[in-house]
Amino acid sequence: MMTREEYFESLRKLNLKVYLFGELVENPVDNPVIRPSLNSVGMTYELASQPEYEHLTTATSSLNGQKVNRFTQLHQSTEDLVKKVKMLRLLGQKTAACFQRCVGMDASNAVYSTTFEIDQAYGTNYHDNFVKFWNEIQLTDKTVDGAMTDPKGDRSLSPSKQAEPDAYLRVVERRPDGVVVCGAKAHQTGIVNSHEVLVMPTIAMKPDDKDYAISFAVPTDTEGIFMIYGRQSCDTRKLEENVSFDLGNCQFGGHEALVIFDHVFVPNERIFMNGETEFAGMLVERFSGYHRQSYGGCKVGVGDVLIGATALAAEYNGCDRASHVKDKLIEMTHLNETLYSCGIACSCEGAPTKAGNYMIDLLLANVCKQNVTRFPYEIARLAEDIAGGLMVTMPSEKDWNTAELRPYIEKYLVGKEGVAVEDRMKVLRLIENITLGTAAVGYRTESMHGAGSPQAQRIMIQRQGNLEQKKSLAKNIARIAE
Image 1 (cartoon, rainbow, N blue to C red):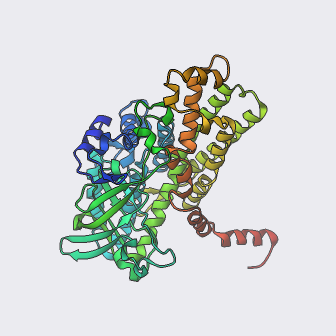
Image 2: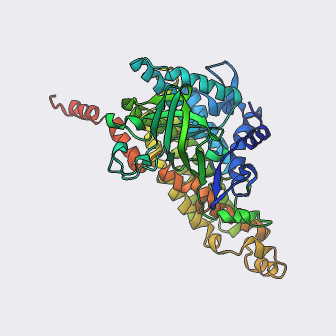
Image 3: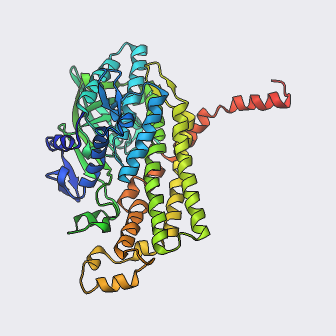
């Protein structure tokens, strides 16, 4: 397994093509806007090397018998699924941000089981292709970006009926040694910090969509791939000189990007689906289920930090003993632990796939994510309520560092006696960062749209809810003949 520093150095060796604010970034690793997100991924390597956390952050590979980072593990039991959720909560607590490796982990488990069933149906060798690829990932401890979301164009039309044919990523040329693809993947979490990109179709497909039913993996610096870095609230604060507490979270962050595939060649040995449209829906459903489980860990860990920051703000404001403040903190904790309970529940109810790796309970995973589309918004609202309006109106760090202004700031922004004004400002900036700033991408807004829209989860809840079986239970109790 790699250390954190080895991970950083491995990214420096990549020839990534990244655009930020309209300019090509020469060195993404040390760019001040990008670096906090890199530090978050680095924490996944750092914790895996610490003995007190290795029971959560490492596992024994089913492919090669080696000790591997859990982010590369193919789940072998419900215990693995539970440990995954606990690991994600831990990382959320350590970073208060998105640490980005979840998508590749969830994609790998979905592709592993789906390729097995495609091979059973068609006699293809996709599963062998994937096992060889993932064995390499485990042994080298690389970070993999899972790429599912297409731009989609006109949502009322299928991929093959779009006016812009590249609105969904597709095969534009088939060769004896592989395929050439064009298109894009949107909202790609952590792609700039990844060694490889694992591409999947984004929706269930019909026979006419054959060219769009494609899954593969290539290095992120493959010819024809480039990234346009996503804009975040308060992102240019990172470019200011001598800035620290104005960032709220000066060390960690997350990112998303629009990834362009401009005639990218994919060799046969890296292809995991190629036209088997009837399996596209299975792959989407399984990936979405795993990823919706993930939110019962990562968002809860960030929620722990936000609850702690809110309690500190109340203390620094001198209102921590007010009954309504105590009650609001209780409600924040209740909502946060409910999310965690769903993540653990869908893990405990998991079962093996035909390929042998374990799948979560899909119904409970979708319930988990449906709650995530709501509860973090209420947690954030309560945090902003308790913190007060100063969170978004207080002077800047530059004002604080200006000699003639600091005495006035210290005089008029004083809170509880014995609490440094600077500390009060720091915790308010942290709350701002999590609820409104750059971290909101990985907490608040992503809670709504990450792993699919709220309606997508409701559709899955309807499918998995087994309404007919529930009707039969009612008929039996009411003595209604079938």
